[in-house]
Length: 344
Image 1 (cartoon, one colour):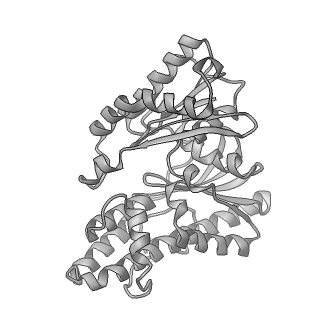
Image 2 (spheres, rainbow, N blue to C red; image 1 turned 30 degrees about the horizontal axis):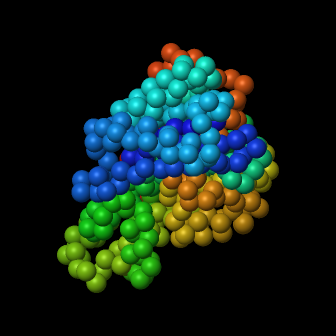
Image 3 (cartoon, helix red, strand yellow; image 1 turned 120 degrees about the vertical axis):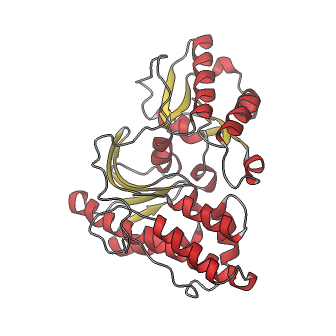
């Protein structure tokens, strides 16, 4: 399966076999292009995808030692994401499918993350998923490919957005997560008092906007002093980790009540944060859950997870009239979270 990912600021192509062998997994990053803006600019991203997608696919084929005639199917992210980039990947995949007479698969980007634990660790269904990335923070029970039950989602901002905003306020650059993690190593996580929104709530939803606001206020009160930056970074990271661990603890209790303890899979770019992983691992062990985190190259946006998600349903390709979706929930029947802006 040839996989293509272009939903945000990474142009990626991968070739994956149905025995889970990854023959190639290439990523062309646009990070430097967007760093000066402090975030991804959709128009810039779309043009960059268009400029490099052919070279990235050719590079993946070369790395795998294959020609395009040896590909049995082609998959591309069909959403959610920045629609310009999603269109580039979708049109390219459809063109290959038509030219070669092979099946085409439109893959939900979130499902790529959701199933990445099965590609790397062979996790069995059902399992609990914490999907935590720049744009998404969700807790879901994964019953099978295409079968998701959402327990909780963010009521405002994602955890990754809180990291990006905090890093921007402190002048640490973009992307914020790795920058804050590096800065926090020399800081005291208890030095700056910050709120833990929704801690102890009976549901599984998240809220990070109040934490972002409180952090900005504390930074302003400290006058941007350079000697306080490491403590600010460590305190923000600790607050985000506490929030994720507390909400995941609630989700594990709910999951175990129906299915018994199973595996907690943590996927998405934020999953690479060592402090967050340590907090979640502690809670998982207490609850009797195993824990699985795909390797870093499968946590950030990549095409191997897109190819694997298509292989999970290889007998059910999509029609060529599929239209890209800027929004595409994994659980379309999920009830909306309670009133917005709830803080504690």
